[in-house]
Length: 235
Image (cartoon, rainbow, N blue to C red; front, side):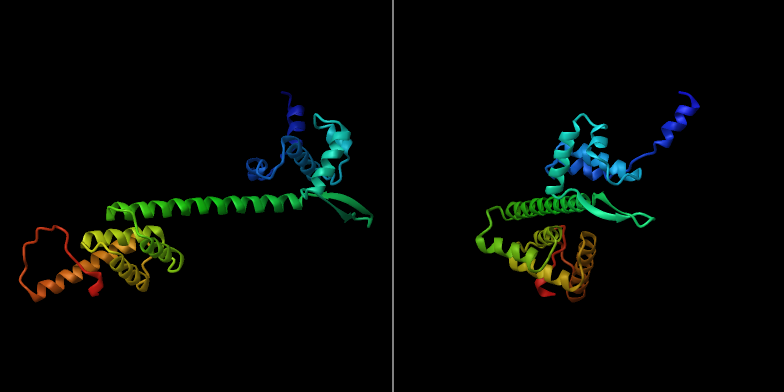
């Protein structure tokens, strides 16, 4: 390639578009022709031509100017493009295409997808949580127990991971019942426990405290259980 050709190629510049447009246009019910037309409108705007004619746009595409006109009309009706007024430096009024409606729709679609992904992740966490409880209890949960789980998440705003940690603490303590788990969650919330690391640290300190109290009151006994017993309900 000759240097002059390379310079001409570089002068064409680049067009930067949001990558999310390429990943979300299908969900926005845009087809490939409509996407290409929007990209060409954007390209012309970047080059200073904010109101390209259907003929100019069609020259870059594989459709006729008539088809391009129909596509533009449909995109305007569906709220992807709008026509607004502008004023030149000479005070001359002119019309221009605005892609602001497209960017607004794209943002709304992106946020909707993010919300749906979060809801799916929450549903999976909740399903895993119910499964963990049924596995430890060795039976299906009763309606009352299911309601208690839902209240911990919805009313008390406990993270499912924290609820699982409280379940583990109850298993270690040999106190596998919902009243005991509820007490653990209450104590954790009162003491600002919000992460697994904080829960583990708090549990270790609590066990050490309980062990120290027992050691001061009575002679040490050999226990068949290698895990120190501690009762959250007695705190």
